[in-house]
Image (cartoon, rainbow, N blue to C red; front, side, top):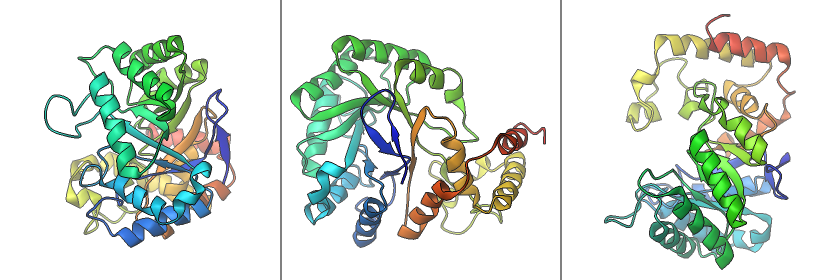
Length: 319
């Protein structure tokens, strides 16, 4: 495993971190989830990323991690970075969503109980709240650090203007923002429009999620939509996302990856990590084999300038 410094902090994160968005809820096989978590840790993945509503059902991914920690993995607590978030709907009523001080603090207390922890290493505001001042949300993050319930704080899904204000407020409170978690992949590059530079200026690390565009940047859909796939289930990834133009790009990118002796998924992960301001990339895993496949990305030679140029040409339809 490669460990990168997170912004200008003293914290090192693995280049590949494990996200528990899918495959760790109450509807999933517990033995498999436990195997993945242990295998990840044994492979040097020290960072496990959650949110209060990960499951399904909401909250059960945190419960699964808590159970695995109680059954032995917790003896290595000081060798792990565990993060969680609040900002999306978690419970009914006026206090279970968005970014109020009430919700942010209550949610973390619930998350700690589900995981059986005294503290998390990183606590995030999962999304900006248009109806709550950023000052209120950020002061809640500052408060939980001073309570000892979180060591660091971060934000996720904040656009550049919102992120800048969050950085300013946290800096003024004396609890600097450690990290920003945005969606980023070859097909969704919005962070290049100011956020990457802003994070560099403020010394904030970036940890990107959805690096494989929820499976599009793999060889999974080269032969069409397979039975049982995420696209067939039509949750966040729908058949209309797989346009003819996008399929043409996927085929060309896959050929380039094969020429490098790796899978398209591995090349997509390397592409995410090509910028030193990206500290880590979040991957999901439904099996230890799939996790091993992702980690193989770290063994390939870095993408050269010519290869990056060819990727850019494919993405811009100028190849």
